[in-house]
Length: 162
Picture: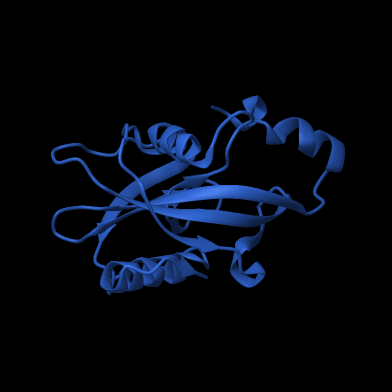
């Protein structure tokens, strides 16, 4: 789905670049070797976790499945929520076009299906698999925090608030 077809497009026509508070969801894909999938985003040209926002009528689990199919080409069934990110220091973003958003993001994780390669979209320039202790540079500001929250969740089983 393109930005022009999204729920946000008509809102932006009304509010311009003003700050919007938005729900979101991200999915940290992990392979059998423990590597994490990151995408180099088309909007900023830097690495981050695949993510998106729900459309009207979607619950958050449906939204993350749709977003991941759009962004990576992978249909996922089982997603596990591991945290929630809402710190305005890292979740308030000014996009290159001037649009400002503060995101409130449900953090999901999912196993990556064996033998499948991610497919780039208009939102992603490339994908790469990285060890959590050897992440690429530069990163979206919230990415290291989301990965650290995932590692804490995996170790403790406790839902993370960041």
